[in-house]
Length: 179
Length: 201
Image (cartoon, rainbow over all chains, first blue to last red; front, side, top):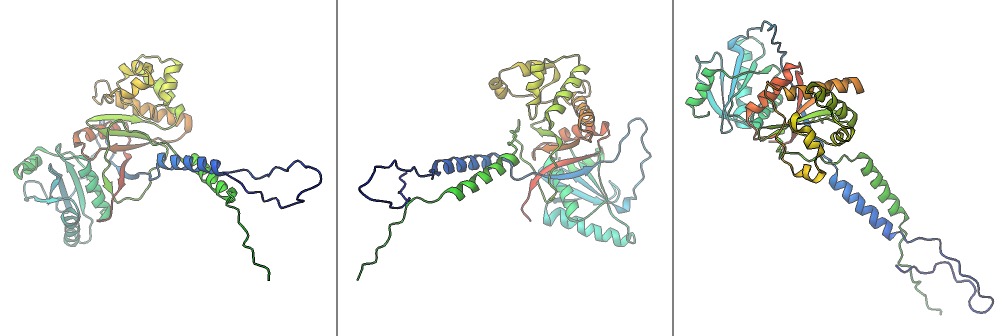
């Protein structure tokens, strides 16, 4: 790139021929080009968005001495059976005695069910918290589980656990074509 | 009346400030960047509304296509983990193999094939489809990897290794159940599920 002589006029013509003073200005264009190239490279390769971490705490499970598990009152328990096709079923109470309601994940499905039941259980039990038991079947996938945990977080339900699905609960799912 | 001369301005712009800024940004990006780790299986993270960021020092269990891959942060911890797992299966690794292993962000090969896998050419190793770490309870391999990684982290950095699970959305629950059972067997009852950001709905 051409650089204009900005060192001022000086004497023109005549006199001794002086060695011209070299300008101290360096052309930085190439350097800036390179720097921006590298910036672009690092910006694109770096992981800017850190993934979110959802903490999950499982109950302590000791195989040698099974802790006496506290029986949970069925009237306050809401069981979620995660089936196939991104659908789930829920019921409050004991399995087999109540008919489960199939629903979907999301705002209108699970979230509404959770909130409604939460209110109802709290009213009926005199202010006690509802307990949610998540039972993913073998046909459900990882996203379903994360969705449920997320909905629980959104609806601010504190007490929940992940359990193994029982055979009679699988039958319930099968009957509704979700297994 | 003298004509007003419009002075010709130099076309050269002073780039010093621009250069300064460019290098400042460059330095920032070099120092903060952590290269993207390629997942060995395509993992589509499920979305969630949690906003807690994942801490840096974690061990990650990547689950996808019914395979499990394991990755630990920190080269020293990796090397020691490999040594102690090798001891359990009576395999000794050469220093070259150890240093190769310490550069792997995550892996998924059975311990029996580990030596062979580490001796491969880097290009071949990249092309090799890793079968995942066996999760069956007979060889107990995943169990040993996790417990040794936790011990190494405790010994070297004096901290509890956090375990995080990076699962594919479509992964079926049984694989996940197996992994959670392995974690619970060694009394890791608290772990993180890695999720991506979900748009509000």
